[in-house]
Amino acid sequence: MSTDKKMKPESLMMSYGYRPELSEGAIKSPIFQTSTFVFKSAEEGKAFFEVAYGLREKKEGEVMGLIYSRINNPDLEILENRLCLWDEAEECAVFESGMSAITTVLLEFLKPGDLVLASSPLYGGTDHFIEKILPKFGIHAVSFKVGQTRDEIMHIVEATGMADKLALVFIETPANPTNDLIDIAGSKEIARHFSTPERNVLLAVDNTYMGPVWQHPLKHGADLILYSATKYIGGHSDVIAGACLGSSELITRVKGLRTFLGNMAGPWTGWLLLRSLETLKARMDIQAFNAERVAAHLNEHPKIEKVYYLGNLTEADGESFHIRNRQCLTNGGMISFDVKGGEKEAFTFLNSLKLIKLAVSLGSTESLAEHPATMTHADVEPEHKEALSITEKMIRLSIGVENYHDILSDIDQALGKIPLRVESNQEEKQLHLV
Ligand SMILES: *Cc1c(COP(=O)(O)O)cnc(C)c1O
Image 1: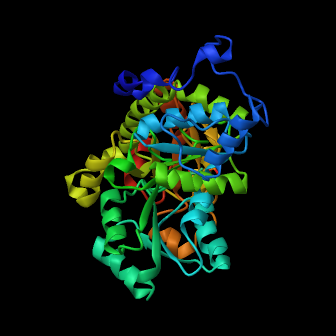
Image 2: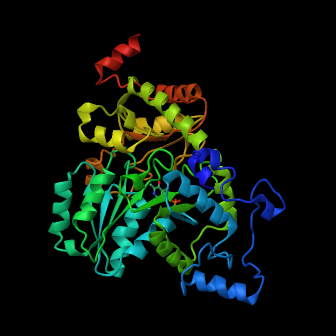
């Protein structure tokens, strides 16, 4: 196993953590579609429960035995071991959705009276849970916007008068749908600043947009990583799942609550994700490669006003440029852009696509397009939307693994359906004449 560790994760995704001899020599892990596991003896059952319920420490070399599929299952354990390799995490817990991973972490690490500091914008479901559900349990929330400095953010925390109750910093970077970046190491410094010997303020990072191949938050000081495994990890738009990674100490707590909430992934979900992980690196390489070509094309297109893509950052963008260089291993597979015009022009584009599917979600093999202002971000407050650049003219693209020439042709033909706005734009008028 120690030599295994030196190999790249993509080389280990087909075999790591699975022993064919335990499954009739099957090259692939079977789906362990079982609720419970038979003990060899009553003594063994007793020993398994002692470890599972933390009644005693594990003995040297003792492994946690299989008891019941709400606690553990081979498909989940193998999946968790393999997911650990990408982020070099000690432990992982998988869930039946990204939301269940996120909400379990929030509930485990926050208690009544606590304060959570969150970045904005956040995924809509996470935002709703923090703003609308947590207050029912007496948990307070405060947020900062992308682009605010460390001093400004610390000031926001202090202004609540509850800085001594800060328990968790929760960030999502790059932000959806604008690709704005948040400094992970800087966020950890904020968490540290408000920590005391009794109270270690934790940093949780939703790494769905870039991970687990393109960004490794633990390396930049994060304590917990969260994923909607529905996105890049699953990658085929056919399964909903989530994951949380971090130190053994923290994930043991997360798994403890997961056992009692009963929101672990089932064996079939586990098996589907094992299959997805074998091609994760290959898929994401192609997606990043395609995205670069699509962005380059959009940057030059006369019907497009602005492109939001990590690869467009230059020295002139200041801090964002340096954050990108520090924490992102590629420019990712997500591109947003503003068409010239408004909702009418954006909808004409979306309704004219043939290859690219009009759907929310992201990170899948097929390219997807959506309209954040009226779809994924429909319930963001209007003035907040404006501040975040989520306007009627914005389209969000998730780039898939198709041949990029075909993606470009589809984009071009759909943009071609947007009528030229003769009344205002001189440049377009000329284009019309040519
Ligand atoms: C989709 C998504 C989620 C929620 O995940 P589900 O698997 O749909 O529950 C959370 N965070 C981000 C960034 C997402 O894109």
